[in-house]
Length: 261
Image (cartoon, rainbow, N blue to C red):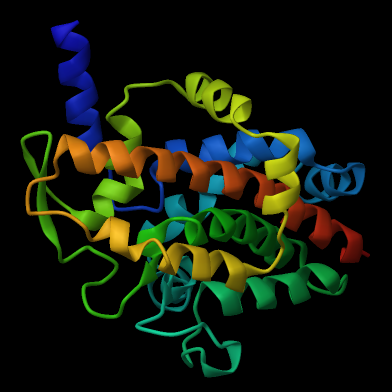
C-alpha cells in the first residue's frame, strides 16, 4: 500500500500544467459518450475514424510542445479565458482570441465542407478539448496570476500552485482509475440534472467557472483537508457538467456539419 501511495504521489506531482490533466479530459469524454446522437457519432467517425473520443479530447494538450508558430503562439490562448470582472462579452475578446472565440471559429470550419480535412480534424479535436477547459475554474482567469499558476501552495506536503491543484492535484489525490471515475460520476447524474445542465453556450460555462473563484481562492498557503472536502464535490460537478455539455456541443456541431466533399 505504501508503495502504491508513493507512486501515485510521484505521478501527481509530475503532471504538466494542463487543463484537468489527461485523466480529467478522458473522463469527460467517457461521460459524453452516453449522450451522443447518431449524427454526432457519424461526424466523429468520418473525421476521426481511428481515434476514440477520449484520445481526441487530450490531443490539443499533447500538441502544445510542437514547435510550429500555430502551437507556440496562435493556439496558446485557446485554452482559457481572462475575465477580471463582470460578464464575458464576445465583442470585447482579445485580438489574439481566447477559448470562446476559438470555439466560434472552429464551428465555422466544421460547417464549411470546402475546408481541408486536416483543418476540420483540428477544429473537432480542439472543440472537444475546450469544452472541458472552460469547466475548470482556473481556466477562467482573473488577469492577475495566470490562472493561479503564480499562486504558490503546499499540497500533500509538496510545493505546487493553485492552477496545478485544480488541473490535476484534486483528481489524482484519490488514486482512482479512469473506470472508477466514470462509474462514480455517471452514478451521480440524475435526469433532472441532465436537463438542467444542458447548455451549448460557452459563455454560460465561463460565468459558472468565474463564480467559483471564492471557493478556489479560499485557502491559506497550505491546502487543508477542509479545503479539499469543499473543493472535491465542486470538481465532481464540473466534470459531470462538462461530460453532459461535451455531448450537447458535439450534437449541435453535427446538426450543422457538412460532410467533406
